[in-house]
Amino acid sequence: MPDKSKTRMRELDPSYRIGCFEEVALGYNMEEALKEASRCLQCKNEPCIAGCPVEIDIPGFIKALRDGDLGKSANLLKSANNLPAICGRVCPQERQCEARCVLGRVPGGEPVAIGRLERFVADLDIPVETVIKRPRSARVAVIGAGPAGLTVAADLAREGFKVTIYEAFHTAGGVLVYGIPEFRLPKSIVSKEVEFVKELGVEFVFNEIVGRTIPFEEIVDKYAAVFVGIGAGAPRFMGIPGSNLNNIFSASEFLTRVNLMKAYLFPEYDTPVKIKDRVAVIGAGNVTMDAARTAKRLGAKEVHVVYRRSEDEMPARLEEYHHAIEESIQFHWLTLPVEYSGDINNNVTGMKCVRMTLGEPDSSGRRRPVPVDGSEFIMEVDMVIEAIGQTPNAILRAGFPSIGLNKWGSIDADESTGAVNLKGVYAGGDIVTGAATVIEAMGAGKRSAVAIKKFLLEG
Ligand code: FAD
Ligand code: SF4
Ligand code: SF4
Image (cartoon, rainbow, N blue to C red; front, side, top):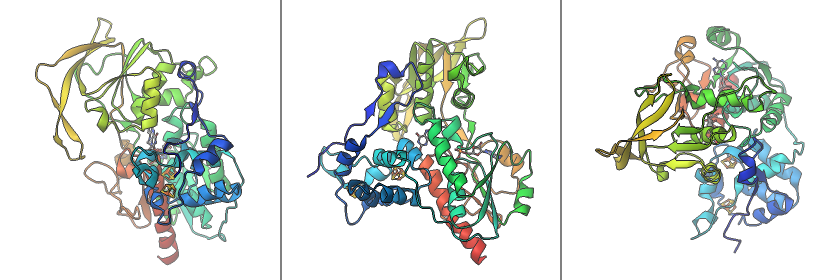
């Protein structure tokens, strides 16, 4: 029987890493990777594959690694997943592939560390054999260079289609570059995997906001098929009294300023962000953890995460939560801010909060938080970052008026193909599902690539 526990991954010491933006998780070396790979039972029914939205041959790539055939391992990975070094780092593996691993079902056992092995093989940078089919005349436009757009573009380019990605920013990656911080996902890793997509022949047009600097209809007329993967980039706000006080930010703005505008490299980059001593971050998802850990690195003395549900309902990746605890981030469960207060200069100084308890499950299946009468108290803070979710940007309604939306204001698209109400137009990723995960967006991109190919070849 293999070891019950995963092979540990080396990490930067918390006392060192809170003073810098270097990557926290250091990955496996060859010896550690082989040790972990040897735990895999090579199950004949391959249950882990069903947990991976891009259907990587998990037992296959692990076996090749174990056999020392690193080229085969890298090829197996990359043939299913265009962005393995990214996914190995940021996938919520505990809810995806690793949740299905039989070793996790043994009492006290941990699944094979599939994500860490994927990262290890991807980071070896072994050139892979990419088969690009003979060129086809049909041209496809992809709007948005996030994980969904990059995936659909790469898969169609492999099929021989000429693909052009239109991206609003000056660089590709979407949330991978402007949301997820350097200490979790180095931007050099994103650039390397974007480079691979370019090598497949995908063309990029940057600084083009479809629906504003170029009409959506012009793109629909010019291309045989169009994929819309513009993400859910607009923040949700608490909307409680006092929200207009100074030093209250959305996590999107805070993280974009730090990541894309490199505020953490001030004065080398002249775009500082102001950080206060006592920072509250509201929420409990990956965005919350990223904002809290970023604030700590930028010099906050205390960072408090405030969440209205309990630890059990926390949506963040477990690894990030554990890293946050190691970095002295303080957690306040079952606590809801209801009002901000400020000083005579309109700077926030405190949050009135109520304690919550958990009632019956709501539509999300999670137990509904209910306020406890008479439990109000004041938490003193001098900066607040709201990280309570994302919605589609207003440009969706204004710039893509012919696309049908669902009741949540996201694009109404067929789940298995991404097809929308317009012929030849597809959509996927956060703009369809609402804020979700990298691998779900990539899974949607993959399914749309299959559907677009069928549409272009069979009509
Ligand atoms: P996006 O990544 O949002 O990409 C959309 C792209 O479209 C962007 O590049 C945008 O600039 C571009 N665009 C928008 N409008 C236009 C337009 N009109 N014209 C042209 N281009 C346009 N997921 C995980 O799995 N693990 C994590 O650890 C994780 N951490 C996260 C941390 C943060 C801070 C955030 C914000 C999200 C995190 N997520 C995580 C969620 C994940 O990043 C998203 O689910 C994923 O990026 C969605 O991919 P997408 O391609 O649909 O959209
Ligand atoms: Fe697991 Fe994500 Fe890798 Fe798929 S891409 S095998 S879900 S870590
Ligand atoms: Fe290996 Fe686990 Fe997949 Fe079985 S379920 S093949 S042990 S990774």
